[in-house]
Image 1 (cartoon, rainbow over the protein chains, first blue to last red):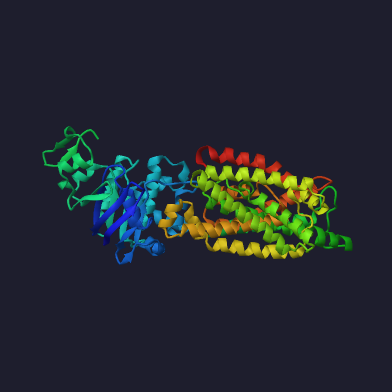
Image 2 (cartoon, each protein chain N blue to C red):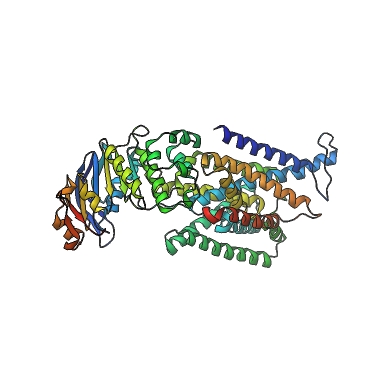
Length: 253
Length: 329
């Protein structure tokens, strides 16, 4: 569903993404790698925020190109790592703007919506986004992005999330994982994050990226090898244990 | 949306009633006029003196508040205002330079040239500020505002020097106009400038969905399909043209471009589809009231800038205390 062919992208004079070839089908894909590996730049390229220097990216039949922004916005949603807020919009107002609805229509939409309920957004609807705590901000923007991908509202086929777990409390993290696993049956999802234990637990595809290159692509994240964890993530050996079920885990995080 | 429609009707109604009041009530020095029994002098007073001023007030208020709101969105900075960014001051400098040039060449300083030179000044101010802010710190809002303030200060000083040393009587009259005054506005000026303003306003309203998405930051707007750089360029031209219209009519009037958008957004939300028409109405209402106060409260006409600064300063502090503490702007 997402096809990345021979993509290169120069980030700075000393760092670039090189020779990326990937084919991503529906499902939840974990994008893992240490800080500065190029995860966010990679997501920026797929979303069309940045233009590739070489190569091509397709989402479905649509080429990712800054000229196609309007069409792209219908088929993919992308949660940025950092959100900026200079104006005191209410959460409801933000949803109204992004969905091109009036505030009353948003209220009706929120009455019995799985995403709004799952992220417990109802008490936040009338709060302003500049006055929310970190986790609340993340929930509000997550809801905005997830609603953009809700198949009954907008049949997008690609969801990109850059560190969606930042600031979320445990209950919402759990809900998000369940929701994404469910949604992943229909659309391609790429999540960049640092929750290695989570990835090691779930039998979901994962892409490991390091120093601007794809290190490995695995169809089952439980197959991540010890050497990968030691080399790519610079973990000390004594931090790794194997559970009784044979799953690798990192202790102390 | 019935509630929002009702809000617009209420705002319109208050605009109309304020207009009517301002036309008929004269204040301390002038008498009130009975609308149903106009003598010859009274009709001259109304049609030649009061109505042009009130129409100017409507136009200036609408232009200033729209342009302030647009600058605030486009520069992602709730503190932006044409007066603060140097747009107003450079516009007025260009008007004065234009007047000097035209009187030197012995050509009539037509309203078209007035607006043209004023707009030119506005565009130049915006581009200078953009360049400065780019060099200083990647368009950060602090860089934008600080470069705007330094530009304003410098240009105002330059204008004062110019007026101070000029022999020309015409230039000296500009001194009064610089503080904000609706004297000498003619119907011809009103018609031309209002058509420019209407075009700008309609363009902004046409783009209100895209402007809405800018609230979420450039990158998010981009993700929702807005070509941010292009939108910003065109809308900055629209915003500075609106500011230039206001300056060409009434000189530099501070605070309206900051106060009215803030108050309107706090009361009616941020959705541009609703807010833009609301801003036009509220800006006009505010400006009529200010013009009316300046005309009626004392036996001599007060400069408008004086009235806006006197009322605006404390009022703005009040708004800040009420909303800034836990919400931000």
